[in-house]
Length: 280
Ligand code: PAF
Image 1 (tube, rainbow, N blue to C red):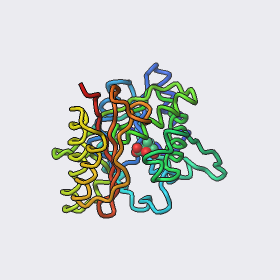
Image 2 (cartoon, rainbow, N blue to C red):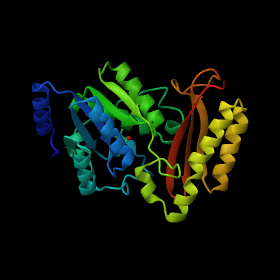
Image 3 (cartoon, helix red, strand yellow):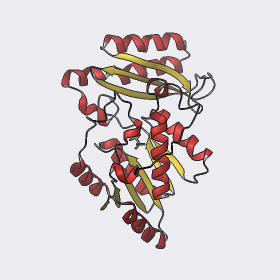
Image 4 (cartoon, helix red, strand yellow):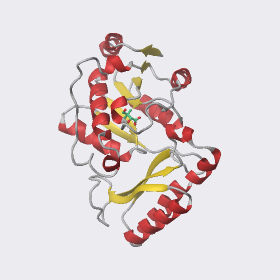
């Protein structure tokens, strides 16, 4: 695997792939890799001949009181994992290469960015959309893969790619979970053992609510029960919401839905989501 930190060198590597007629997949990440990221790389390898993984802790998607400074950075370990997983290129630009002096452009996807995460993290999705637009421009992949754990992010990126005619296939890959159901996330590294144990209430609450909804239970009751479970486990809730799985707007009982939640345990903010199929 080649590790590349400068755009010129990235362009040279990509040009040689293209000259050989090879297709290219991009897996954008912020590093601190876990099995969820590796599942993205493995899927990417099935879908393209060359796999580029980016690691860039994108400062503009963190709010002023968020965890940019303490976000885990594990370059050596990440590089080893990606080599083992069969990635071809690790694209790891420094901040000055991504945002050189004078950088003045922001990409904003209105509507789908404004609700849920967007309502709690002002500017977050503008930062995501801007860096993803840049990564897609830098790599020009045939396909780009993102985890479904960040379900709203995936919707924002799909909208971005459609609206700007970026001509790349966007593929969502199912969330990878620990044995007890907790969604894998780089932020799980922040949890102490007690918080880690209590954190499992998040997937459990969503799972119970999803099953109740699929049996035709009332949405208000299912959401209230999920909130109670989270509060009992010591979470502070940002939101627990049921939305249409495609538009993230109002759910309709005869269409696929998604149940999403964001909540804080101690100093760690976790998000998760599950599919809710229409009741039979
Ligand atoms: O999901 C992430 O890790 C990030 O939001 C992404 C898509 C790499 C953009 O910085």
